[in-house]
Amino acid sequence: MAGAETRDKAGDASFKPFHRPTALPIAFTAAQTRDLVDLLVWRRDVRAFRREPLPAGVLDRLIATACLAPSVGLSEPWRFVLVEDEARRAAVRVNFAAANAEALGAQAPERQAGYAKLKLAGLDDAPVQIAAFADPDDAQGHGLGRLSMPETIDLSVAIAIHTLWLAARAEGIGLGWVSILDPRPLARLLDVPERWRLIGYLCLGYPQAEDDRPALQRVGWEDRRDPACRLLRR
Amino acid sequence: MAGAETRDKAGDASFKPFHRPTALPIAFTAAQTRDLVDLLVWRRDVRAFRREPLPAGVLDRLIATACLAPSVGLSEPWRFVLVEDEARRAAVRVNFAAANAEALGAQAPERQAGYAKLKLAGLDDAPVQIAAFADPDDAQGHGLGRLSMPETIDLSVAIAIHTLWLAARAEGIGLGWVSILDPRPLARLLDVPERWRLIGYLCLGYPQAEDDRPALQRVGWEDRRDPACRLLRR
Image (cartoon, rainbow over all chains, first blue to last red; front, side):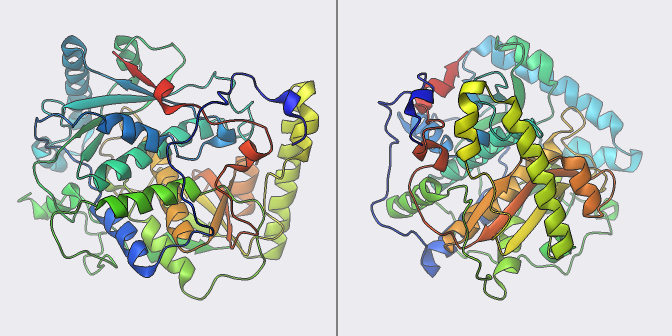
């Protein structure tokens, strides 16, 4: 656009993306596409972590990769809050325990015993814990694409989390997305702006074990369905 | 879980995922990780498509890959509605035009000329168009993980869209996510259940051009920010 004068001066023109490929056009070979599908098959929502920390520099690299995610109007509404303080981590565990007790009570009686046996969080062991929020108030993007569907801000953050997830998995690092939490008190205990919305609480670390099937499938809670039944025609 | 008797009989035990890797554990080599980052860098939100159709079988394969996405409680709430009927496609264009006119009017006066020049949808040319919905009422997953954060259903669908996006890009196929739409009338014109929620309207096809920068960045609408400023510590 010729109108560079309308460009938001808050944009940091000196920032260079950390990686660019050199050749055009990009299309994967069959082997590269197979690698991608392998990664998707193996992703896993990890609940059991080894306690060893991630090597230096890894987290910054994973966050940088996550920020390559698409976002509505290039608004990049993701805010990653690294939770390191032990007292705050303990408060997150208390928040989870209360939400989990409520969720257990809401299960059908015949499923409660099964629910109680599930391991639904890795909060005790995960060396890295990140609360991912959406900031609906930043001017970045100038509101483009979200007047009629403002929830696209939250969806953009979910996709950044997924990007982080895949980047971590590629390096052998597991991620577990904890959603059994009361989001408003959790946001308050992390001292973030009132209007930020919690999208997910993420545990990261090396997994204790690897498997090619979702844990909920392995324990008989639920099965995947045939993708063909998800496609309708109109 | 021993309690196989509690398993939902609606699960299709005969369904086999279409792809499994053979070796454990999975971790990418440096070259494979570079491929993944290349794909993320090159993804693009495509607005200008060539009209040629996708080869036979491609769409079913992409949908199957999208269904490898994570979902809250293994609920797989995504519903992909392939919009083929010309009258319905025309009605989607009308819906977009009205929402876009409203969005133009909501822009700050000094940005309206720039907004009017943007190409924000590929609805005229994209050979494949899919409305992606979230179904909040399916029993799959038995409510696990979403009592305190019911919006995780919608976030799961967003991640399935992102998975579809990456799988398409790997095959040289572009995807454009249109969010400048009035979602309730759009759902009605596609004759889907009343409670399904529109998450995104997707255009797919071979792109007219490829570029390593987001279109909104190329035209001066917005810039990416340094990922380091998105990471806070608590």
